[in-house]
Image 1 (spheres, helix red, strand yellow):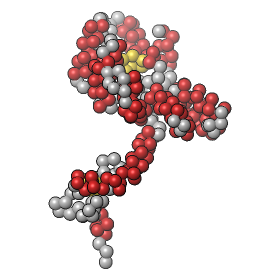
Image 2 (cartoon, helix red, strand yellow; image 1 turned 120 degrees about the horizontal axis):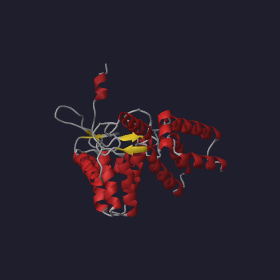
Image 3 (tube, helix red, strand yellow; image 1 turned 180 degrees about the vertical axis):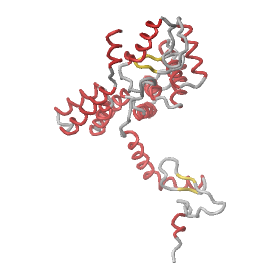
Image 4 (cartoon, helix red, strand yellow; image 1 turned 90 degrees about the vertical axis):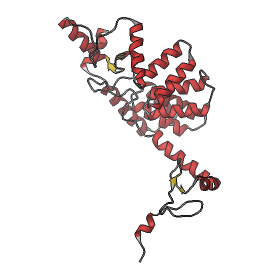
Length: 295
């Protein structure tokens, strides 16, 4: 009678030795399709496995790339817990804690302080507000020293605006390593322009994809352009739909134009229009409307 446990034994793809006792296997780092008992076996089998590995790795990458994110890279306001709007003018970053607060919650806090005649403080962490740019910079650097990715990204932007592209690259790299999608997006721009680092198309695309996976609509938009230029209209449309579903106005306008040209089906456009409107509506509230009128 066959022992069912035998079907669970791993064997080296190169030499066929089984994973028993002191023999331990390691999976292919890119595709997880095969296992090897040693680096020598992995190297010797490379030519046999390379094509299948690259194919599956690309398929797995596309699964992540074309999965619809639940939120944009901005996430939710940490106070009202509603999605933050894509328009940066409708939110504010608090330097003391690196939290991005929607305009509605910032406005509500301001009104509360005016009516109560109390000191102005951060709506989130309640630290007193500082008065000068120098004090703001010090607050941000304290967050940088605490390995805060948002603060690192902000410092990278500040260094870029000063013309120090190398420092900008270093800060964005650190923030990206901590998972910040905006930092990945800015790294793609640096690799594209060759500022602070040598031009590298492969790394530019990699960081665009990482930013897009993290919900960054601008990264999605740039990837769409790349796909169009390479003749991959089907992949370009996928990027448009994902970005439109996040509430990106440019992408929904592009989809409408592509529908007129026959590249997008009526059903896909209708679904994207509904998702786009739902995403935009999710960012609205009476408090945010009052803030827009006030400011």
